[in-house]
Every structure is written in structure tokens, then in C-alpha cells.
Amino acid sequence: MKPIRLAASLTALALLAGCARAPQPVHFFAAGYPEKLSDWHLVEARGGRLAPNTGVVPYDLATPLFSDYAHKFRTVWMPQGSAAKYDSYGPFDFPVGAILTKTFFYPLPTNGNRNGKSVARTWDTSRDFAPNAGHDALDLANVRLIETRLLVRREGGWEAIPYVWDANQSDAHLARTGDVITLELVDKQDKPEAFPYVVPNANQCAGCHVTNVQAKRIDPLGPHARHLNHDYDYATGKENQLAHWVKAGYLTGLPSADVPRDAAWNDTR
Image (tube, rainbow, N blue to C red):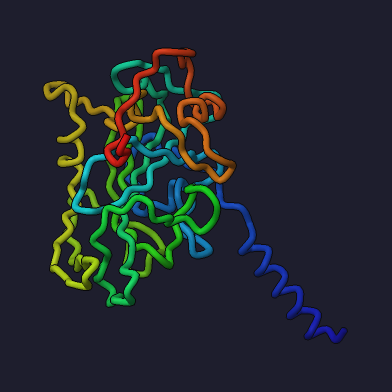
């Protein structure tokens, strides 16, 4: 092989190796507000998917809050060797370093009406937005990412940090003062409706999660035993979420019986 061709081949191999390289480990910031969501290495857009990093576990709620037809992709991460303590009623006692993410997204219209602002007005949770088996990732060809909110457990308590996704869906950027995103909700009859999506600022995030106004203490609302006590379709197969958290080392003290359970809003039984 000629030297020039050999050098080109080696360069191509190096580029391929770089593309296949595993993402960097999750980075917990004990203070401050990183400018990009990717700085945390929690969930990243790569290879046409929004996927969680190693050790970042997706979860969902039996009956989630309705938020202007937005869908949500939730994850949890904790430092190695640490775990949340089970509570049968309130939020779990999470360790310092724990991070919860909630990515708000809309499915794209299935009728081809995609003008950069159009999103589907649907609450159809039967649609599969994952590119592979399970629901461990989102297929970016079929969804529009809007924002990702972080709840970070620091020494002084939980902090809410909002990020807004850019137009090319490559990364999300810090938006502590909130934002307004112009969208167009398209219903099943292909009828559009102008819709300003409001991203709350950091104080508004805290307003929903506050548990002690005087101390300005906030707590997670989603990861309660009753909200998580149902199966999740992981890439490895369906499994009860609480049992999965225990297996992952993220939960201690789960009792063998009498765990509360929410009714699922879309379960006709």
C-alpha cells in the first residue's frame, strides 16, 4: 500500500474509533451551573438517539402529570456505592450526588407536516418512541426535544436546573431565566394550532417542588414508591421499577410486601 493511502486509511480508522468511543462518565457538579446539558454526561443525543449514559436508569410514573400534551423521558443516576432509602409515603431519601432528569418532548406528526415547528397533539402513550426494544432511548427521527430539567442533590439540598434544546437537537443549553418556544400543535385531522411552549425559570421549577417555603427546601415529586411500583419495559425486558432500582444498587429498604401502588390513568381495569 502506498504511504498516502496508508495514512488515509489510518486516519479513517481513527475517526471510526472516535465515533465508537464510549461517552465520558457522568460528571456531578457539586456547585455551579454548567452551560450545556452534555457537560453532565447524563443523557446525550448521539447516533440519532437520545440515550442515557452507563448507570443512568430510565423510569416513568404510573400516572404522570399532564403538561400540554408533552411526553417525558425520565432518568435517575447516583454516585457509585450510594443509594436512596425507601419511604412508603414521601419521596425517597436520596444521597448527595443523585441527579434526576426529565426531558420534555413531542412526537412529530405522522402525516408529514413537519415544518420545524409542528409537533403532534397527542397523549397516545402506546406509541413507541424508542429505536430498539424497550424504552431506554428516544428516536430523534420521530420526536422533537424541547427541554431537559435536572434536579441535583447537593450538600445544601436539591437544586433545579433547566436546559433548552437547540434547533438541530444536538445539545441543550442552560436556561435559568426560562424561555418561550413557538410550536404548532397538529391534531389527528391535520389541523394546526399555534402554541407558545413556556419553559419555566429555575424559581418556577422550585415553586412546584417546594416542601418548606421558609427554608426554601424542594424535593422530587415523581420518585415515590406508589408512582414507581409498576413494570418498565427496559431494553433487557420488563421488570418492576422498584426491584430494578434495588438490583442497580439505587434503592435500599424495599419491603417484600405492602408497597403502595398508584392506579394507572389509562388502565381500563
